[in-house]
Image 1 (cartoon, helix red, strand yellow):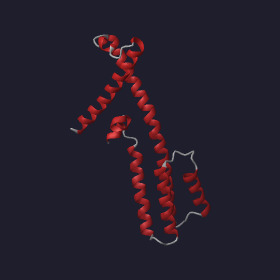
Image 2 (cartoon, helix red, strand yellow; image 1 turned 45 degrees about the vertical axis):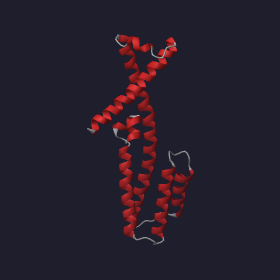
Image 3 (cartoon, one colour; image 1 turned 90 degrees about the vertical axis):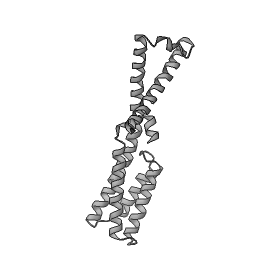
Image 4 (cartoon, one colour; image 1 turned 60 degrees about the vertical axis):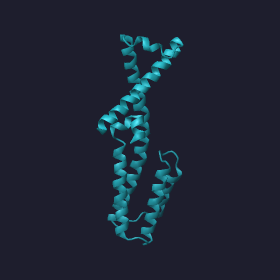
Length: 175
């Protein structure tokens, strides 16, 4: 049943977009918002809705793919950092102070990356936990658990952005 509901949401979104475009184009060409209704039984109508559906798909794909790609880029950077921390932990190699400075400047002070507030909070949390581990305020087991748990959550978030239903504005908001 939920698949049918998702499909209906998608069809509703597409229909709303097409009707809105038909109204706008009808108003521009004939100064009558609903002039397109008179062409429903014609081949011209089928051509128009086909072109508008293709236009809709291109817009949705372009806009949402770029947004998701930016998110994936930021998440991938965090996954790399956590993986690096796991490798260092497994080989008893702590980050050097200059490496921590590079992490802070790369993630917290560099606005060129696609890093949002949540990403910065994650990096701050990582650095806080790392510093606690480094100063022996938390155990190796707690640090290892934190890293592995964080990695699982980040990988899930990364894979979530590849789901196909994310290419719908309405389904994206509802889910």
